[in-house]
Length: 99
Picture 1 (cartoon, rainbow, N blue to C red):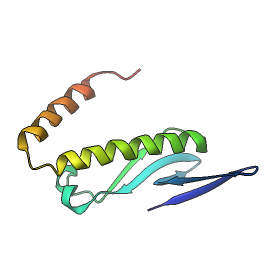
Picture 2: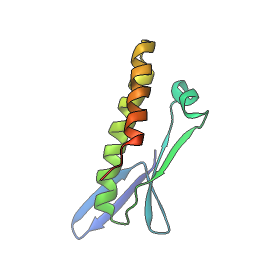
Picture 3: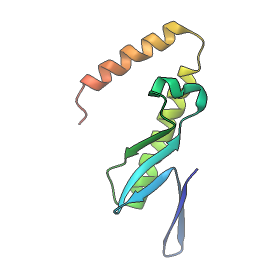
Picture 4: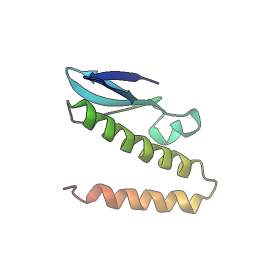
């Protein structure tokens, strides 16, 4: 688990699962072994947070962590109908433009 610490005067901020590449924040987290098959066998999830601001990176990393935790708990579900419904919902969300 990666952690980054930033200091803004007397304020200290800890950010988990964030790596910096050329000043841009990237979310990097290990995918649990029991759900790796749903991600094509990948062992890490890496995506750009599209920011250079540490405070915004912390907020976006927290949102991504919450999203992944809920996805993984659903994938661990034993109900195949629930997984099929999730896949249909994700397909709809991918088609919808984000504003």
